[in-house]
Image 1 (cartoon, rainbow, N blue to C red):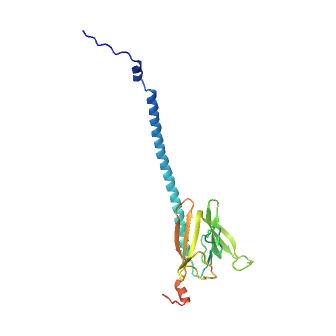
Image 2: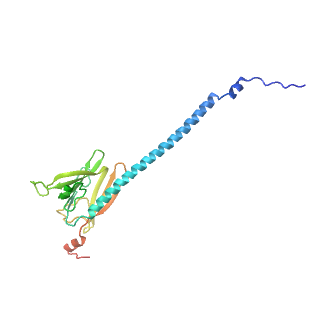
Image 3: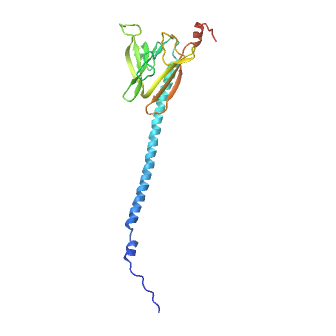
Length: 227
């Protein structure tokens, strides 16, 4: 009878059958760390994308509302307003204050502001970047010179601006001007072109607003006749 010899006793084999080696544990931990890191990275990117989209919607809403209100205001101005802009230059190298005398008062959050005699739009340095500020004006009881006004109320309209400039279109000259002096051009411009950029938005916005005025009447006064 032939008897097969028994396999020699192996302590390493016995230990291996009962658990994992240190190398296997380290590899498993590395894989788990890699998977958790990937999941965390994906979730972080999704949160950042959602935050960016939310901020973009807020900026878009601000721009849309601002443009809508400005368009409604300028398109409903009467032709006999006194329009003055850019006569006083600002440190930003763009257009100066925009002064409109007469006509309905915009952004009148209180009934008394509707009785104001003029409204002024000006870009000023704010807490974050620059701000477009609206001021309601009235003539003081003792004016030093004609055209003097005192501020009765003011309010920021658009904050966080990186830049803002405006230009004005004269249909007779067929040119755009950076300023508008009522002494040289008593009529209001036909169009106002506004360019601005918000600090959190890389886009540069440009809008053109019709300034309500009687273009046909202007041509009659200049001897051009009605179209």
